[in-house]
Amino acid sequence: MADLEYTVTDGIGTILLNRPHRKNAFTMEMIDEWARVLVGARTDPDVRVIVLTGAGDAFCSGVDLSSYHGGTPTPLERKTQLTDRIHRIAYALEDLDKPVIAAVNGVAVGAGMDMALMCDMRIIARSARLSEGYIRVGLVPGDGGCYYLPRLVGQAKALELLLTGDFIDAEEAARLGIANHVVDDGELPAAVAALARKLADAPPVAVGMIKRAVYQSARCDLRTALDLISSHMSVVTSTQDSAEALAAFREKRPGRYTGR
Image (cartoon, rainbow, N blue to C red):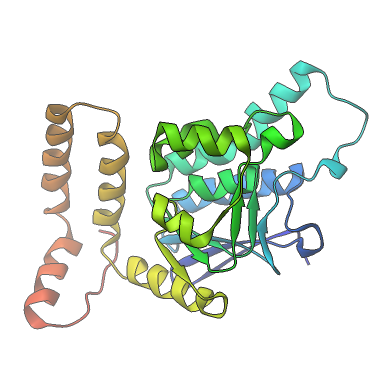
């Protein structure tokens, strides 16, 4: 079985980190495949939602340091590894207008926590524990934690979590706004599947434009954001899916959407 498995079923693409014996710590080969999957999903009409999860009793414990070979990398080699490989996940997700859900089972530590923060939504099992963790080994967050975490929990709390490396449980993650939902461990697959199904069944053009508008609006002023959404509205209302959604609403039936 592959260390990273990708499957697509009925509009839902699932990325499974499949190294349970290493708490799903990732290798560079997994990163390369992960980025390739996300880039491909962007233009794949058969994919409307992505789910990211881990096998076994963990989500992801970050990078697998034991997979490094050839001695200690130079500063340039380390920077290149981050910018040319690991950071490609963040760039691919920023380019992806389709919703991405992290199903967090078990520990999410360091880069593993950052990978969950990069997703649009997080459903977390009740037994999960999250930590930025880098400070505990004398490192800085190399995978976007200093960018994503303050946007979710605020600057002061983010600094506390980043500078202490403290673990938080699922309930605290929900209170801070990291988790959309907390569910019992046995209910995690069903809860994620239900949300993914709801999103995959929605009009895909409208879904993509809503996601794009939310992220773009966070980086611009009110007038620019409203100008952007007026253009999105004009495009969306011209689609076949928009007409179908209105008809389905009036007829009290599920819509059938084609992305056109």
